[in-house]
Length: 36
Image (cartoon, rainbow, N blue to C red; front, side, top):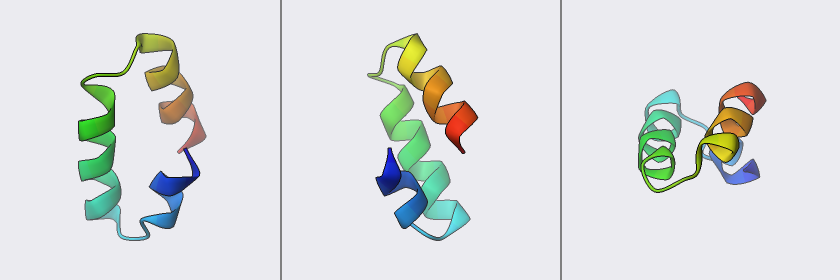
């Protein structure tokens, strides 16, 4: 989860978020969304 923050750029963070969300279970998606 920290990796998303370490990505730095918003564009990169958005891309990572999209790639992570697709195969990720909903509770984890919700956690990622609230964390960022």
